[in-house]
Image (cartoon, rainbow, N blue to C red; front, side, top):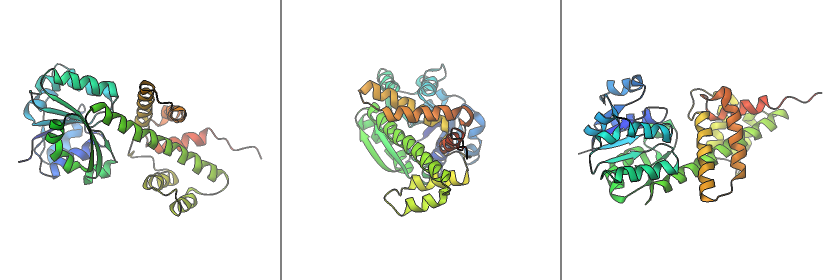
Length: 295
């Protein structure tokens, strides 16, 4: 019998993840800060909880997919939050991108209540979530991972495991650091070529025939070529946030990451007018910073 899952956070990735669990036959309870985002799932058979506390009390395990560590702490610690409803022995599995300190602190917070915290961030877009092809980085006690394994099997194509939640946190930040850097340099590459009269599609054909080929380069290159920055697969503001988290983690661990700082600053500048666009919209910002030379 499949566990009853409580799911909080129905954004770009969270909603298709919750929908996938429902499709795979998991009894599902949902809660979202903006209640209307749960409507389509409720129409498909999910049950709407009035509060995080109610959701935690009724679920066998809880999944959260929220914006950041502050949002996660708020949904846990509020008067009607998860901590008030999660019984001893149950698991709160957060699949968001957060900071290592929040992962460590929540591990201790729940341990003091004889409950378990697992951090299992994911890599993949909304389509991978919808199709159960996410990559899952699970950090925490073996018992907690085992309780969540049926959910992981439904959502992901592969799971990596570490003993400490903050290890999984750093793996996700390392991946997003690379993702942001690749996006920034792809945008600069296409901008340089376009200024020489070579359209993005030609560059993408060249990349596809070379060692530069990758699904990300082709997908985001097409996004740039068509200037289709909505709907976003990943908000530009979230990329800037994750780069900030990566820089903070690098400083804590003594890792020198000068290029990450430059990439972060580019996304921060682009964020002012493009926060809700896809992160590939950094290309538009680069164009604005590149006036055509005088003839």
